[in-house]
Image 1 (spheres, helix red, strand yellow):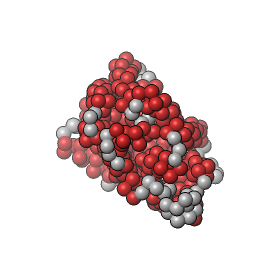
Image 2 (image 1 turned 90 degrees about the horizontal axis):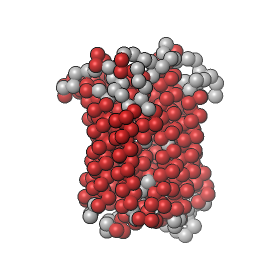
Image 3 (image 1 turned 45 degrees about the horizontal axis):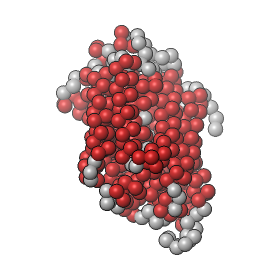
Image 4 (image 1 turned 180 degrees about the vertical axis):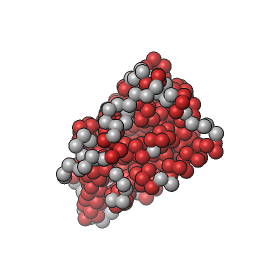
Length: 418
């Protein structure tokens, strides 16, 4: 890989941006990390408990995966709806309301008597989590520009990715001690910490003079303006396709690996944690690499790694033997390594894709954050139940979905402008 030429969008704005009174007090970065990482905490921590959840609520693989899908649909829809609102009213009102509702929804999840109640509560939890996630990204764009913003996005994601590393292990311990409901009780505490953190350490970052009209017509006009922008649209398409591949792993790996290989929840937590380390390490590396290589180059490198790992997983799964036959699955160690390759690649793809989309949509930062995150999560939410619906008795369906999504993202990235 060779050093690319400086990208015009960043060379003009290498220093952090401080514009207006709202920027005199910098937001506490740890609070932004917690807000943007809520999706990882609210999904990964209870992944080891999915089989137990299904047994307790008398539902199958599709039903348990719907509790994931409902959260992600809420997260996606909430971003699409609330991101543009933050461009009109500012970031802080939503940053306060989101954690409060997240806390209350987590209480309902903790006591849910049926899978239907849990699905509804998870949807509300997702919408509430979206407020913090979409506004946290917009706050970074409010305060920083160019290479500094790209580095901050990477750092935001890298630290946030420690959540998937720690969450399954914590979830396994919590489930062993108090059952799957205890994971949601812990999320009640997370919501409270978010709320207190925003109240004390995150001032308003969007000056009044930069706010935009909040009517539905004006919001739709901002969305349309960004979506007809070829540069912004191309980055969002790549993000959506990559998310399809990545969420096939997120939603399918717990059931597939435990069903196919018979591993314990604690072993799955170890697999997920080590893969999360690979992803977080790549994102930490990006905070320095972005000073030498353009974000579009780093994203493409990540897509190559993730796609290659997915295709190799599919090929080895097909070559291992007849589906469902004893021994007709690839060695567990090989699957583990290839999944780590996938997550390592996504550690480059996700932060650089976010930086590229936010830079392209800088004129409406909250709306750009909404479309970039909301549309990608929508695609992920749609694909999650497919693994359970197709089969959890083989690695093939999950590997095929991963390879198709990431392969398409790699092809699409070749036509995405820098």
